[in-house]
Image (cartoon, rainbow, N blue to C red):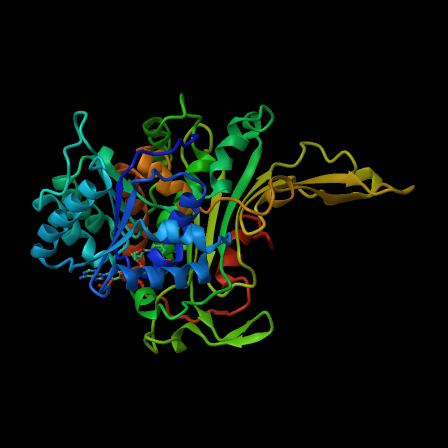
Length: 500
Ligand SMILES: NC(=O)c1ccc[n+]([C@@H]2O[C@H](COP(=O)([O-])OP(=O)(O)OC[C@H]3O[C@@H](n4cnc5c(N)ncnc54)[C@H](OP(=O)(O)O)[C@@H]3O)[C@@H](O)[C@H]2O)c1
């Protein structure tokens, strides 16, 4: 897990003019460049229909860096970075574009003394992925994965498919041109420092792992809450919804990391084997159980931070009678020796009061209420909270005696904050993931079977939902913690959601 400086390569960003490239990929590459993590010969080629010249692309990326780049660097760094950037005007739908790309890449490799290693990054709309992958293969742009020669790797953004059938079909297309060892399916949550810390925290400290099971854990809550609405992406959201957009990938990845067995080694396939086992251990639910154990929500107009915001149905490109969910809650049971009987409650929502991603592990209360006779009627359980974003850190709630002559127990917090200990700047997830892809380390990327196992679970819910469209939407006001039904989901089990 300690990336070394990667070999020289050509990084081809399909979608070089798009939002992801401008907001995340190029700022991450610039940061790696400034840290000396890119080989001097390494080049970045931006493939898109709308870039006309190297100069135009560079100027646009400079503006993007000013807007989205984290650490500020001077003109000198920019000039040396810009010299690595080359535009390529092409269309994913045109076979000729790929033939031309091959010529362009070979010329560039010769000019810069590049060894021929290529990282193809697909930052394009999902509908273009199949075309791009097939044409890369057909044009002879993919080096074989065996032998000592230069390598070709493919990085694919989420969403990887729309449901189980489309994810399988896409995997088949990918398999026709690339071997699994060449494929890097991104879930940027896995590149976050705090996500990686889940395993270090669990398995690198002797005191937690013995408690990490059904004997001591009462239940687990995983929350991905956003204050934002759909931010102009109404069309995308109408097709996707939060279950596909957040639960299928980010939340199931977090679930896997919290619930997996310790791997026998910290190696890509061993870690991913353990994650797949978690997904396969999730108890299948009947349609009735799905209707009972899931909640769909959609926000109505309300206010966030004191400012009025419109309801989902009033957003641009959203149907006035849309039944698309912007909130989802799901009670998941993992049927294995470690977790049998411990519910995992997942919730994700837009327009909630606070932006927060966290995993909260609530432990069982002590077997005897020893202080009851002293008047302490309710003792809060210990809760361990792993905060993934923002304000990354770990907090533990413990009971402590309030000072004074009477016996009062208060719930107090031990709190570790990343920024306080390690400083404000933590590397962006994309920096780490790009480095790993260049180094050929797939540990933090999803494997084919992992993606399909996640889609299998999610599709089973989506199928039942599509049979029974909700009639009560919108059912929560923007700026509140979601629909009443989500509160009832936990209340039925005698529990309640945390207020992060
Ligand atoms: N934006 C994010 O923060 C984010 C986060 C996570 C995942 N993603 C995923 O990343 C992918 C890209 O998202 P995005 O937000 O960057 O989309 P976007 O802003 O719409 O950009 C799409 C890019 O694809 C290019 N493109 C589209 N059709 C093309 C064609 N026929 N030939 C050549 N180029 C074509 C566009 O270039 P031209 O129009 O110039 O050809 C543009 O550069 C999507 O799969 C998205 O789900 C994005």
